[in-house]
Image (cartoon, rainbow, N blue to C red):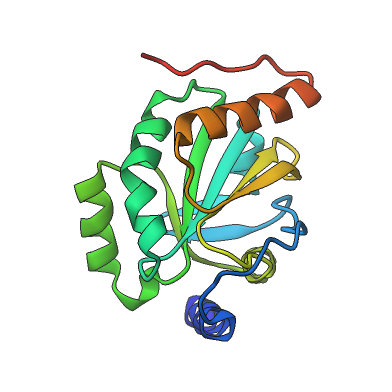
Length: 180
């Protein structure tokens, strides 16, 4: 029931944002305590965030053309990351068509975690996102750090790696380079 309420809230958010061309509020919130339901039927929690030096979170929707266009690049990027950094996605409208969302991600080669619902803590974070796609960088304490990346990037890997390395450096962690 909670997942259904969460999806209704998210759908209301999408409708209220209309064209979704607003700018980021800069206040994406915290991932220090939450539980999310994943597209594959599992769960993803703050413990999964704490297990990595950095978690890159991409907010997207099946309704969003730019989100869908960048998904193959996200899939390739996710596969190239070192073990201490993870990329996950939060699909805000997968509840409308789970099988279609799974098929789309499969066609793009994305094998990572996709969150499709969650508790009130996660809902609060998701409702603060004003544009799609939006990507945030979260340290092992669950704190959103650095600048959000709004919209598609001409060179996704370069933009994400630059932002990730800035956060890692500020956290006293080693910077990353992508696997070839």
